[in-house]
Image 1 (cartoon, rainbow, N blue to C red):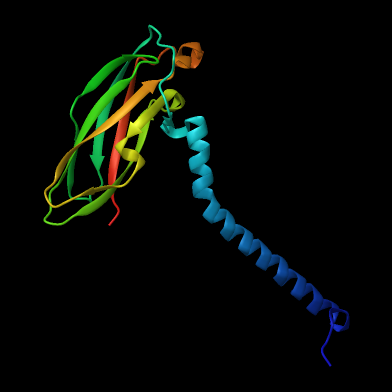
Image 2 (cartoon, helix red, strand yellow):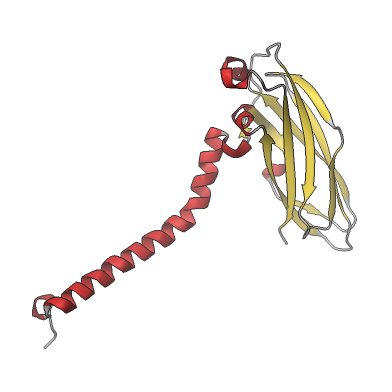
Length: 183
């Protein structure tokens, strides 16, 4: 006959319950570890935390007189044999006005390589006001052997930047990309 829980001595019951609790905690912690990256990404996208830019489907209806200089930066992870650079140093736009920039990437190898870029802006507090409408950074990029391509970025500064007293000192924003090898 099998032993039920009620037939076990008290010390074995405690061990069994402790084991169950520890198992549930371990599974919960593992689940939180997997959920943390997408949850953090969502948090950053909604708040602009860490200079995370926003994605906008369309341009705003309002253009203000507030001028912002947008500077461009490009980096490549050491594991990706690409050249990558902005084709302009900076552009000046009014808040709400469409901005456009081009970056150039070149595969320096004899085989096709996939890459993906990460991005942010500085100062970090400007991330919530920097909106991209179109960007090469939204999808992975494949460059064939020795291929060179120009990659556009269409963006705007949210006109609401004018109403934020913490943004009064922001005259320039730096948009930075870093490309990483995917495969």
